[in-house]
Amino acid sequence: MPPSIGPQDLPPKVIAFVIGLSMLGGMAHYMDRLRRGQLKAHWSIELAGDILYSLATGFTVWYFASASGTSEYISAGMAIVGGHLGARFMFMVQEALVEKAMRSIRGEKHTDQNPEP
Figure 1 (cartoon, rainbow, N blue to C red):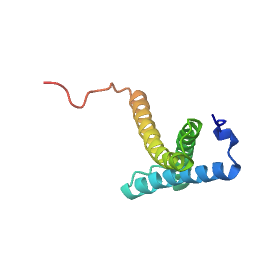
Figure 2: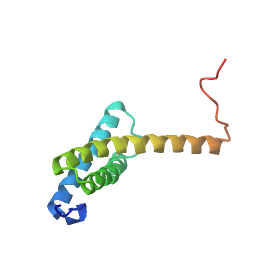
Figure 3: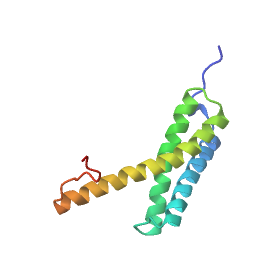
Figure 4: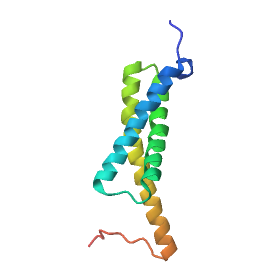
């Protein structure tokens, strides 16, 4: 049985490559939000947030995929997809938390927008 190679055993070039691929996912999410007109803060803050979200999720996906023995190419592809979808997921969670906080500040109760008849 060959010795297992974990993510910590990979050269820094590979790790830098995965970080770059994950950043592409954040850039794609930022460009999508820019196109839809969903940016609410200064562009640099929004871009940094999307990139950090995608780095965290993309690198985590890559780390677990690499640790499980998946090939480098599949792990890299999973890092791109994980970075992009992770940024989208984190943005949705952020929007929900901000909405809930704003309702709490205004003293509004949560109302179901589709009440049952």
